[in-house]
Amino acid sequence: MEENKYDLIVIGGGPGGYSAAISAAKEGLSVLLFEGGSMGGTCLNEGCIPTKYLLDKAAALEKVRALTEKEIFKEPGLFSFQKIQRGREKVIKKLTDGVRYLLKVNKVTVIHGFASLKEVGKAECGGMLYEAKDIIIATGSESVNIPVAGTEYTIGSAQALALESVPKRLAVIGGGVIGMELASAYCSYGSEVTVLEAMPSLFPTEDKEMISYMEKELTKRGVRILTGRKVKVIEKAGLSRRVFFEGAKPEEIYADAVVLAAGRKPSYKGIDAEKLGLALTEKKEIQVDEHMQTNIPHIYAIGDVIGGYQLAHAAYAEGEAAVSHILGKDRESGLSVMPRCIYTMPAYAAAGLTETKAKEQGTETVKGKFFYSGNGMALAEGAEGFIQVLMEKDTKTTVGIQIVGEGAPELLSFAALAVKNRMTFDEWRQFIVAHPSLSEMIKEAALDCFGMSVHGAVR
Ligand SMILES: Cc1cc2nc3c(=O)[nH]c(=O)nc-3n(C[C@H](O)[C@H](O)[C@H](O)COP(=O)(O)OP(=O)(O)OC[C@H]3O[C@@H](n4cnc5c(N)ncnc54)[C@H](O)[C@@H]3O)c2cc1C
Image (tube, rainbow, N blue to C red; front, side):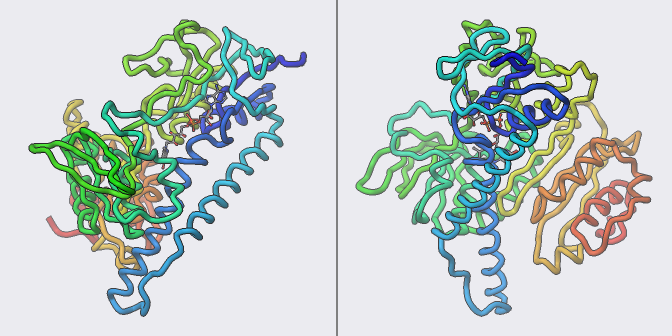
């Protein structure tokens, strides 16, 4: 290999970029990875992992509270938020060090700096030119701003995750996944949380009954969720903030911190799409085909920069698809069944079709349901919620599963596999699930599709 010449250059070391770089190196390619910010990208540093760290401690707190209410525990949960934050930092460090180690042992060359893509096969960083036959753009995304006055008085999700104390009153602008997860966590830590969502309902593309259950449970815990409210102005009011918004009528609230979580847009640091001639979608994301190829041969794009699901596991899968294509391998991308999770308390998780989506595409389905209240493990754990399985009526195959309740994201992997393999009703009947476990509920809901659930309510 000539100096500065590689088989593959990857721009961006988030989950998309670093995993694609490692996979390509494992396949024998010489790989150069540029990371200008923190290795591990949004996911490890200010996204998936830090939110889950805060949500996990919040869940523990809720559990202690519930047990104290039942007089099983004697003391309410007293906690140190500073210690929680130090714990969050330690986990981030452990994971980002781990990624650096994996890159090293897989012989991926890493350059810490922002690269700019010059032309096909050429990237520049720190005044040096680097060449490769193929380039993967994995530059991720950044928070969007909203066109109202006073957003300088708000904080982003990254800052919200790193607060040193719990705000007494927290306003969250945006009731998407990021906003709702932050709202759920801070509510458990004691903030009076108000969520302002411009759309008439939360998560309109997901299962309505389940989202409504989640909304009710969050409201019971104290999260004030105001949908159909457009924020107009944010003002500084002494040490606090005053947020003016409008639904049917003009309203205002005071908060000690205001989080702006109104969505994310592709990051084009170092990528001059126009100059390069890269085709973009209407939403200004990089347009790719099923192999993650852009309109320019040998330039691929993956992860948040291409829009779509904007999830870390989507970025991993897209990286795999790009690397496979670079290697000339005809491998199924596996992108057809994308697990979707909202880690609020209660959590929501889904794979495959919802009932509404099935109807829209003309798939006739039957629905099976199972409630946590009928499951021994759920009762032992004090977990609540319900599960739905959708099967295509004619073929009796699994086309969608939704879960709302404790453990939903963990339960989903098994559910997603059943959807991906279009598991049949007979296969569900023959399938043995460990007892007691929350997983039993998925089988029960599947059997309920055709009236065969043993522990479910008779219908
Ligand atoms: C608060 C929050 C919570 C989230 N929770 C979840 C979750 O629970 N589950 C989930 O699946 N997803 C979650 N996400 C989304 C997830 O983080 C993203 O989908 C994922 O990180 C996208 O990966 P990526 O590799 O495309 O980009 P990123 O992770 O954004 O990484 C891109 C990297 O590229 C670098 N970079 C950019 N331009 C250049 C350049 N020119 N040169 C060198 N380096 C460059 C950046 O510094 C960055 O490190 C969450 C996001 C947020 C904000």
